Image 1 (tube, rainbow, N blue to C red):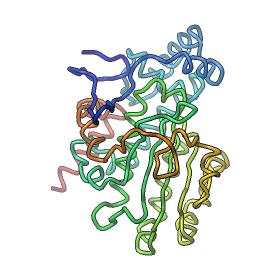
Image 2 (cartoon, rainbow, N blue to C red):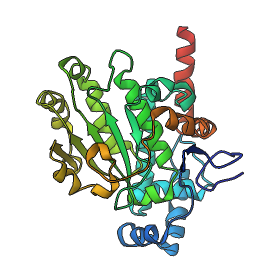
Image 3 (tube, rainbow, N blue to C red):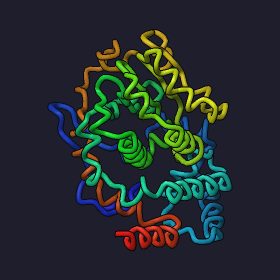
Length: 318
């Protein structure tokens, strides 16, 4: 079975049954609301789509050493949408996306769900089964009392975020509306705070600012204790204005959070009214595992010669 937004062939659309609720990736074409937002915010019309794809394909052919699926229009659209269909900007984003994978090869080498079970079993990383009032995906990270930092490292948390966002990039609706992130820091301890290092902070900020082909519309920090100020001090100096303005601190002020994410779109844990079941990490893992071949295919592209050299170096050291 061939799904336009995916690079791999699949036998059936990935889904997991949760009681009366079906958890799945939304790989269908845009809804009428999505099409309206795409036109108004991203300049997306059939004519602009066609000309931008052709221009991007021409530009990518000229990039030395970069191997990408040039014949796949849907793959190119996932990079054109966050760049409002400006082909030159999309080409630059694609290069940064793959350059980041080279720079942080130790994080990306053979990155796929089947090799990262631990982060999902820890149940500190989840995506809400529903979208928010603006059609955005909501990613939740609980890095406080629920985080056993001796059992799961921040590098594993990063890999889990990458796996989730790569999946989100497959969804046309998410390509248009983007995503928001909630960091629940309730119960953060000094020992946990020490896990955050300047290199880790730089990697996260570089990733979000330069290498994520997705519209990150807001980062919401909730339930943070005073010690979180020490953690944020690592990030603050390297944030550019655009991302800094999208980081909002709410503490325990739920009304402040509701100003950005509607109460009707939040679970009861956060005072919301969503009656969908809480999706456990292992349930997300089950769903992502069904896309393992897609991640394998994703890993085939990029600056492949450099990737091969890095793999050979690693093998020689063994």
